[in-house]
Length: 469
Image (cartoon, rainbow, N blue to C red; front, side, top):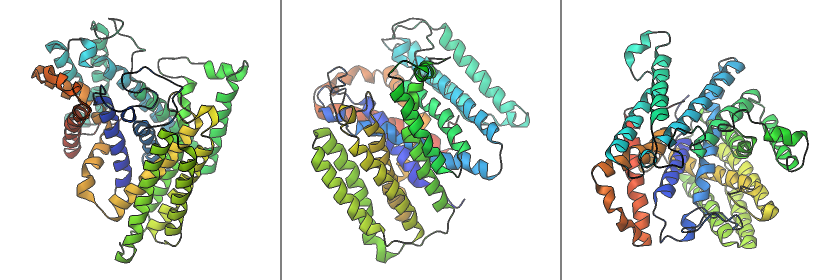
């Protein structure tokens, strides 16, 4: 392979930064579009609100990036002839690790251990963060490389220590003071399910993308049929481990599987001859990036403000403009971008046609329109980053996105397990009430905490301590 997929890292990076920022802002005075559309600031969940905000894009973009990584993590192994059932087992082990990660992370937050975030709780959170390096960094203790099962011995010991700590703590920051297997991070639980089910689907449909897509109508059929009594509802309701799996989580296959197609296109491009950037085509390439970005921004704005007819009109104009620019580009970049464009446009338009179904687009409870619209926008997001990161090679300006995207697990926990405990130990968090005074200060809180978390993530990416499952 000639180089790393910087566009994919950047997409994952912007998604994880968006996740952190959306969770760390003080929403007291912020406008509704700075939160999930169905959970506006200072209000409870309201499923009757339709539309999406930028916050509603970050998780599907991350899921899309997860699917786009399959050709690199699984496809490269299948190319070498590795056994499919062995890869399925590895995917299952990965999912188990993510489930543990979800439970451990949720229990080891300092404000969960102790609602007052006392010194003990803060040091326990910091210790948990350090322990997770033993769980998720391969060969972090070099001496164990000489032993056949040395790496896994270190990992299993760390997992055992983590479980013992969780099981024996008394929690004052959650409803029950004892350890609760159901108390977990739902986002990571969803990722765990995708890590297994989407991986298995990819493994057995490798180089047969049409077969992969044929899985989705059956998933949809189960959701639709489960609304009525019968054997399909029995399948839908069955779960041997409800704290780790329900069929409901499989709805996100509608995002991950399209993501795997984008990953295949990216994998093909990386392994093709490298294009030399032509100054003559630069102006057109700028327009490709701008129209891709405009599609994302306009759809979020118009769907949120419910200007549905105007959104369809603007979307079609932008799509036609993009097509007219791309159709004559026969370079390796052009072939890659055209593939992204056509399937992205298909998903986006399909999602907009479905918008009225189930009342309107909505993240919670998520609608089919939401899956297809966000998948379509994710195709244009990776197209945008391909232009910026790979074509124009804006390496320095996007490096923070790439490095954050290469280490998303650390980024995800850094604020809760490192930044907040340290700020509490230094008593700086005692002055956080200042962030409740205005919208700007509420946003500033999110920016500060997110920046600290990303700087920490970038440091570990630079020294190549990556958390992997």
